Length: 246
Image (tube, rainbow, N blue to C red; front, top):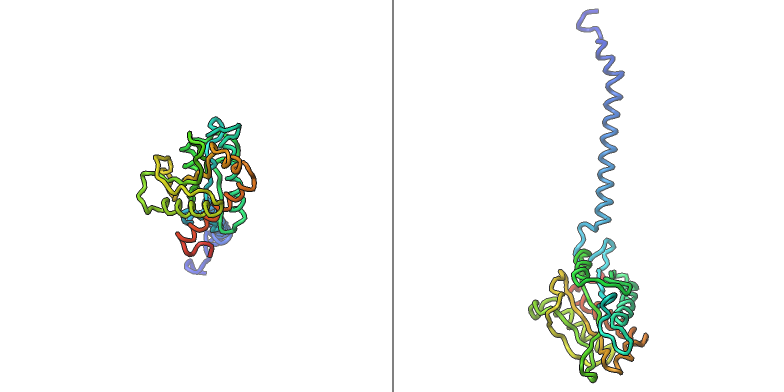
């Protein structure tokens, strides 16, 4: 057999040793690619990547509810009634209504009688990329005859801003539900301007008025307020986005 036609022992060794080695490398490469793809998909799902502001991975619209005051700051205290407790009770009822709506999701700044800074409350909403932020509070005044519901927005916002629109819709819904005096929507120097979404603060009644204090501590009236707040939230979302819930 000539030199040109004789099989090479090096070629034979390559067939025996190198081919399985190359196959193993290819399999390892494919496995690594699959692992990276799966890890990337998992991270995307956990972080909600690609979702719009206020939408969770289930496409629910996220609302952040803030029960005003709490902990070291009880708010107004009248006849042993603490504003912080009233605010929390009403907020919990609103949260329950939102949780029952499969179009919505809810996050609360507090669920206990604890202190939460104003900055932290807004940060919770901003970090969660919420669609709406609402602080629920009770009013107090040196004039015991003062009554009614008022909704506040930051005075750093122009009239017609989304926060103003949200506040106006909310005010209408709550006064319609409760029959309370409508004190309108007002602008004040509030921390709400730090919110990256429409934000409002509703004062649901005066603890310094005996009649309203009695109502505000009544579970049935608290539920009425909560229903009005929920109705206002839904009405605004439907106005802001006609495709809401579709």
